Image (tube, rainbow, N blue to C red):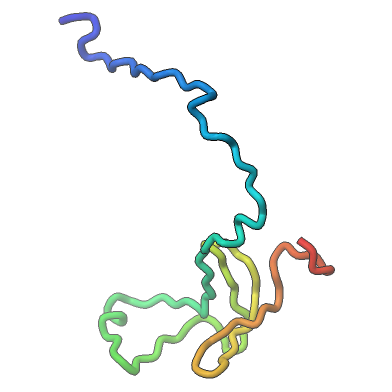
Amino acid sequence: MSPTEGQPETPEFAEVSDTDQPPAKHLDLADLREITVSLSAELGRCKMLVREILELHPGSIVTLDKQAGEMTELRVNNVRLAKGEVVPIGDMLHVRIGEVYGLDDHGGG
């Protein structure tokens, strides 16, 4: 059995020079304005048995843990952003913002 048998090989890495790196670009806040994020509002939650889920059919009603008129949270990429009231306008549900987390009383950031 040779001395290196059974031992992991040591990886070899090529040297990286400063000239291999692309020039640094300054990121401006305006650059971030075009990034798409996922915004969600949770209407409520409930726990159900698998049996109950399998019995669901068109017209079934699922009771959630929030009351009508209760504030809901808005989340951006699952991070809390704001609280608001769910309001129906036409055939769509909307959220009227009541509080934005992290803003002081003067509306600043």
